[in-house]
Length: 461
Image 1 (tube, rainbow, N blue to C red):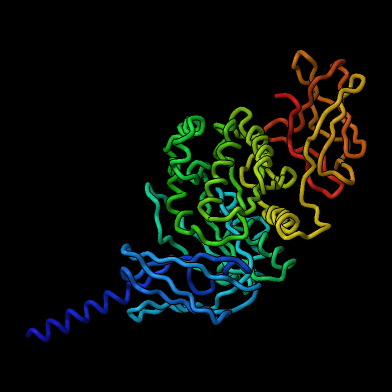
Image 2 (cartoon, rainbow, N blue to C red):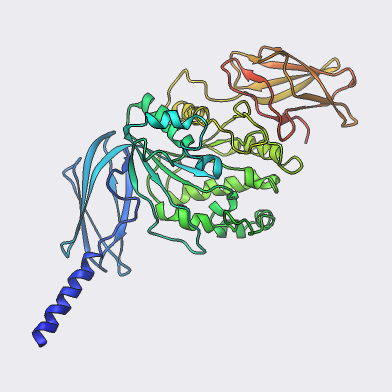
């Protein structure tokens, strides 16, 4: 009887042992690792166990050891883009995990709220592209919606090869970004989509970062937490949808959010700088952060929409950031979700190709207000990012206003001269300030010669 008990106890120990060598959900078959980089890898095993890793692209043996909490971590050094490869992980109990069909390429994190989450199935230009989306070198990892009061570690999600079926409910903006990147770089592209419609930016920032800043905390308190479709408390989405994937190596981040922060726009640039700084620290990587300026929409309160757009231009002061302006891509200003996502994704790709990958001859930056000068009852506005000049579509430039010392703004006539615009109004003899597209739903017609729209701005404060 004693021998039977010992035998059964041994079987129970073996069964328990089989479940001990574990990896975060991010490390799985079909994954893509960032090329030519130190790539952190981590997991759990028995306490104080030797961990040995073999990768098929190299003959080096990587060794580490789990601590007394069962956690282990080490670093893989990846080759230039290619694959497929395998990664074999063993512990000293003989347990083993083999990751198959691992590709090496460029990995981008895609985050934000509903316009980033918007799927290929839902997008106005997604279904046709979806039917043709057999792209074995594009891999998709979708992080399930989740929130938590404390940091989570394992996470949820599965890597999938891009097919019409797997991309159907995946982020359309992300896919179109990846498709253009893959066509231009000819390397595998990995996308990690972690987005949640309606979430304010505070939910994506570590809670301690918000609590430590009085202005950010006051703005966060305006959010409340009564939305039935998503949480609004600081840090709770970061805990469950970002923390489980840090410090995975990424090439950069795409961000499409801001609609849910229009109730407290004045601190948005500060909030996003806090988010970007925190994420770069968590990912151990000073990665580029490219984002989409929110689109014209009628139903923001007061000037919330245009003020957020102003803050999103100010975010360019943060190192290694870039903005995509989409004021011309709106088919219905009463819909907070512009239907066509392909041009948004492709503009993001152009920004990455130009700024991250050093490709030349790709127009990627919208003209931005630089300075103003009063000239005999008129104001001349000068723009950056317009080396070949400006143009207007459908007639003279629209959406300009001009004011004198009385601060009353009048509709203005505008004339393009090179990379400048001369603005005037008969009601204003001695102008001091200009505003352009200064309302939540403005769709102006001023562009660079390359076809990129000029975002809203004001010369006063």
